[in-house]
Length: 80
Image 1 (cartoon, rainbow, N blue to C red):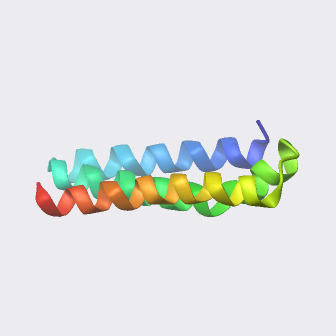
Image 2 (tube, rainbow, N blue to C red):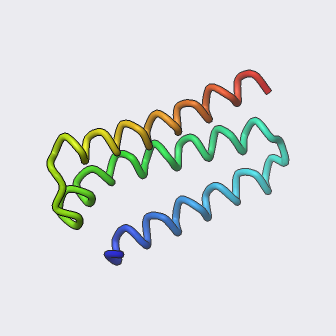
Image 3 (tube, helix red, strand yellow):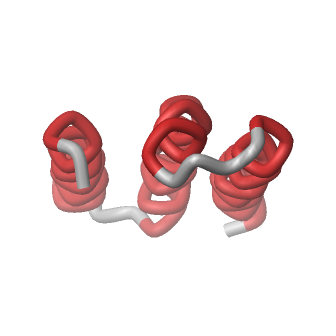
C-alpha cells in the first residue's frame, strides 16, 4: 500500500475516533464515518487505476461504491 494512502487512512480513522469521543453521540459517528468514506472515495479512483492497472471505468465504479457508502452513512445519521 503506498505511503500516501496509508497516511490518509490513518488520518481518517483518527478523525472518526475523535469526533465520536468528543461528542459521544451516535449520529455524529455516522456523519464522521460518512465523510471518511467520501474522502477516501475521492482519492481511491486514481490509486486503483494506477496501482492495480484496471480500466478507468472499473476504477470509477469502485470510487462510486465507496462514496455512495459514505453518503448512506450520512443519510443514516439523519434518521438516528
